[in-house]
Image: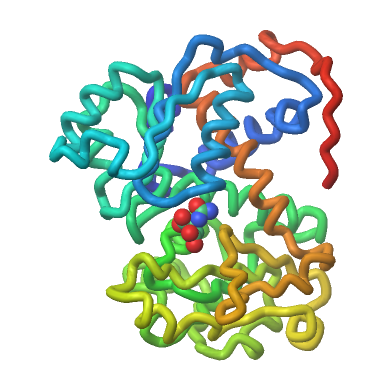
Length: 337
Ligand code: NCD
């Protein structure tokens, strides 16, 4: 694909070579993310960060990624602080705000809303999550993380064995990830959820059609034995009719160190898009996993910065100028792992 000026709305727009391009640029962002160098390549550029649903990682990492490239960030969070609360349409909001920014990231509770916004926008738009539909930048950072973690274990994306666990019906991160994985060969995918929260057929069918192995289960312990990656997700409470309905499923699939030791192969990588629900009635990834070196959730979140910097650099066509506008960092910076 041609990245220059492109919207990033769905993982369906990527081919394998596009993924390689994004990951190569993401790798080159490491010295900036580690605060070894700074670059001013996007000096003067403005990111409009518009988040109409709660967000910590996605909102802040998009913002920081833009800052790390030297650009400025303007934020709108929640409907109440935007003119949408006064009845303004997405079309009008997009026409106006795209006059103030060079690129816009948007998260919205309605499926398809970010694509609708992008149609009216005069600048590129990145989908930061539209309802239960898609979360393309998360899928990219997940895939980047999977590739990195597997490389250290002598395995690759082709032949990947992955268990996706939790709310597979409403989880947009797993919807985007499973579609992205279709670009690779010989996958073994295990889908673990309550029956009512199963992965919709529209995502499973293409995998089967392409000859990958798909297993569906509602039993955690017996599903995590033969996989490279355990990808846990949160019950998407905000997509249910009531909190009580979500409560029925909360806490069904808890992974802790004892279960990991008993059922997982050694060195199975544990991932989660975060936030993990750490309330006692959920506790999907127990805190006793925090010392497990295979818990990759914070490396995964760190990788979000690299992948989002890469997307900005490619969309705004500065990927080959980043180093030209760089200098070493002069301040003290302590960054543990
Ligand atoms: C996810 C999301 O918003 O879809 N969070 C994120 O962006 N990392 C997952 C979630 O909220 O459960």
